[in-house]
Length: 301
Image (tube, rainbow, N blue to C red; front, side, top):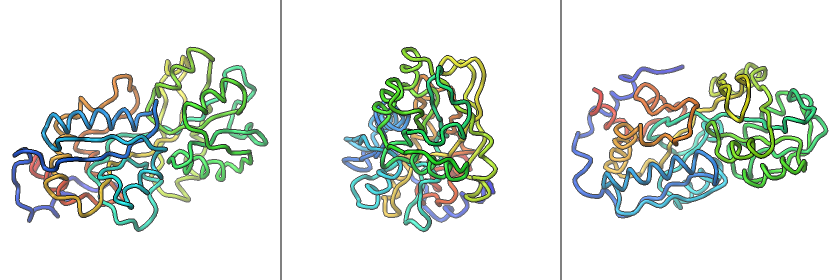
């Protein structure tokens, strides 16, 4: 259930409302991001630029990772300050806080256009890439295949290797969770024609089992040279931190998310981008960091 902006923010009312930009909040911030060619990494690099410009930290380091699961591990081990994660990859009961719901990932099942595969069920008995090890895509794909009762050999290749394997017919399909268009897949589509398999039919069974985290989204016509739109699965993406992130840092990062939203969207993006107050504050099931809640309240009342 979506909660109101005011309900989320009132809990921060007792926190003093001070300026976020009186010199660097910290010397160094690290963001655990994702794979080369994907939106996690692109978004984190854009965010790092704006955090430096705003003077939030003197140094902002973006870490390349396998994705959500890797990022959550790094956050728990105190090897990163901020981390991006798909909501469905977050285990129950983690000691985490959110700075915002930043955008929506699209789970995409990619096949060669000249392949015989028209539906998810057609992949039974084949070999696929089910998302990189350590990625949120691997979590969502495993759930999807279970819901669809599709048995296949699952490899876990990084994005670039998965695209090459698909082009070389070493896998029948590759699953990827990211923004649209994903740069690597867009480049692949210009070399080898590809198609996305429709996934919308599995939204209802996934929601019955895992709740409303999954959403019905369309990859627009024209993406990857497609003639028509394709229904796939959408999963909200959160920017996370630990509860002990200093309040001033939480506020400063949140201020950047809210104030510089237009500069944080990868240039090629055509899919759903949140980065507005109505969506930023809705981070269920992870509560907002107190600094984030206070800053949203200061900015928007």
